Length: 99
Image (tube, rainbow, N blue to C red; front, side):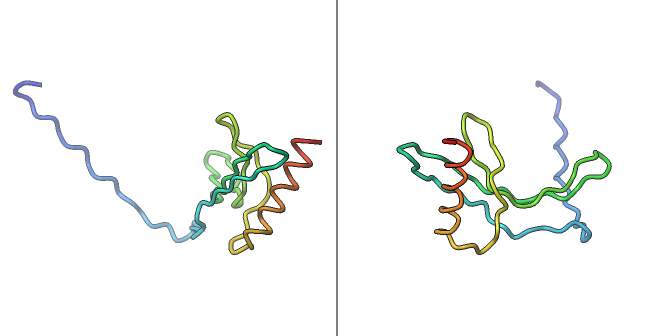
């Protein structure tokens, strides 16, 4: 653009909203080998409800990832023993993939 200046975009403004709970949950990932196949699991933080858009709140959850899609598996419990998480995820695979 010759001779014209493009106005700078304003910086984003972040507003603290104390009525919306914010979790300190870290996103975690697991790759499990079950019956010779590798399964990828990712934990996602929950989100608060949005009444204006009629969206219900969600809890922190483990999801199985495959082919660009995700399937809910089980609740994510902060501080849960990793061996216990792996066992529960493997049980889910046995019940829902190989059943």
